[in-house]
Length: 358
Image 1 (cartoon, helix red, strand yellow):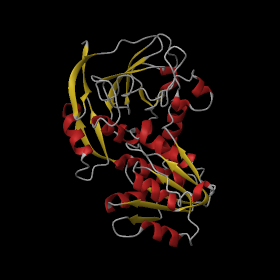
Image 2: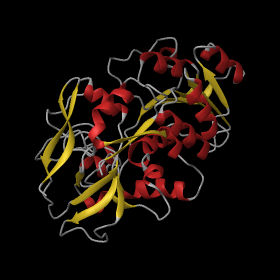
Image 3: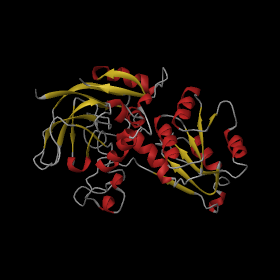
Image 4: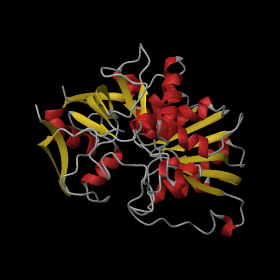
């Protein structure tokens, strides 16, 4: 068999299932047979044409699978081994990586430098919504799945869990902090869980869907606010005695959520931005205290690499967190267009879909 099925971006509004050649394996690569993958909100930005990728590119960046073939230079792994790889798969050789920002990867002198360079799957190279995936720099990026963890349990690790936790980490949450997390989609839910693990004393979750707020409580939120029922800013200031929160995590990518997250932040607090924005942001003068409020705004791109994946799976293995309830729907790969339609329109209470090629 020399070909495989893959979901490819054709043009804005069009994703199709096509036959493509199975990738050839170079010395530093691994060919992974995908057992489960999923659709991310970033894939919806690609589908809508809000984030440009090449026509014909296989999209998707969250792989769970089995090593089918190893390159001659990849050591310490075996064919048939269950593995994941991060959505961000850096080479760890670039200036950005060696400067402490591996997600940015940074390119090289030969190929130029650009932001988000570590995000290759479904961005600059073929991605995971296919029967097979070529993992570059496999020695640095493949992480064996511990015994006892299912595909659904580790499916959030490559992107959603890593991104949500990065939001909590970048916010510098300390024991006893008060944290507000805006938008309880999968990333926001993982940010709630990350804030709890980092020792936040009070976690306030904000969303417009009670179903998601209920899940947020299960993952660690102490207070849930439905923005359709209460004035979120007034309620958060009441809960904090007028002080504001130590950290806000914005997990949607809209002007409204960003601005609200800034307005409830205490002087000296941190706004940790995880949303993917499709329009320019404006920073309100009063909410930013004319630049004199000692407020920090930080952004994060999902950390990748095998050590990051090992640590995340370690949290799951310990029993401290179970993210499998975030997988609400299952589809075969040949129904990928249907899965995109469901996910992009957020019907039927969807959070994440599991896509299984085989």
